Amino acid sequence: MLKNFIKIITSKCEVIKLDNKIIVYPIFKNGSSSLDAYAYQNNLSRYYNRSISKFKNIMVFLREPNERFISGVHTFFYHNYSQHIDKKVLESIENFSIVDRHFVPQYFWLLHLFKYYKGFVDIRPVSNLYRLIPNRSGPWDHGPKWTPFTKKDKSKICEINYEKYVNVDLKIIEKYMNKSVKLENIIKEFKNEVS
Image 1: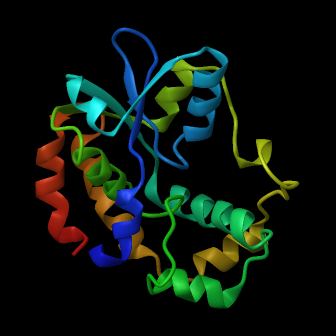
Image 2 (image 1 turned 30 degrees about the horizontal axis):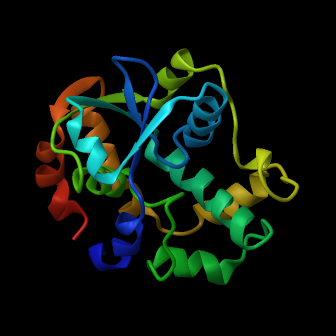
Image 3 (image 1 turned 90 degrees about the horizontal axis):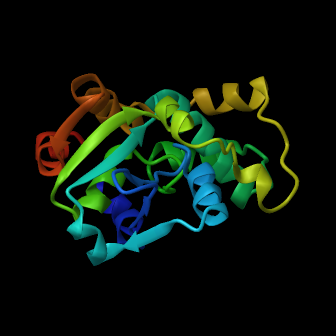
C-alpha cells in the first residue's frame, strides 16, 4: 500500500503558529480549512518543510477515522467529480488506484511531518481544535456550489471495504490520544500496518 501513497508525502509540509506555545500541524478533514482561514484572518506565521524542525512540540489533531474517511471521500468527489458519487471511482479508491490527501490514513500525514520534524507531538481530538479557534470553514467556502452530503451518498461510500484506510489510525488514537509522544515512536511502531 505504501508505494501508492508516495505522492501524498511529497507535497509541501506546513505548520501554523497559533501563539508562542501552540504550533499546529493541519491535516485535511481535521479542521485544516478552519485553521487556514483563521491563520489568514489573524496574519499568523506559517512554517514549511525544513523550518519546521526548530520546534520542540507540535500539536496534531486527529479525527475519528471512519467518519474522516467517509467525509474525505465526499470532499474528494466534490473537488474532482462535481460531487457525483460514481461506483467505478469508489472501486478505484477501494483498491488504492486512486488516493487523495482528504481520505488517506492520518498516519501518512504523520509520516509526511516526520520528513522534517523529529520532536514530540501532542495528539488531541479534533474537537479540541474548535476550543482554540472560532472558525468553521470547509470546502463549501471555496469553489463551486456545495451540495449537502446525503444519506444516499454516505451509503454508497460505506459499501466499499475501507478498513485499510482506517485501521492504523484507530490504533494510533487508541494508544496515543491526549498524550505527548516522540513522533518517531509512532512512525516506527505502526509502519508495518501500512506496508
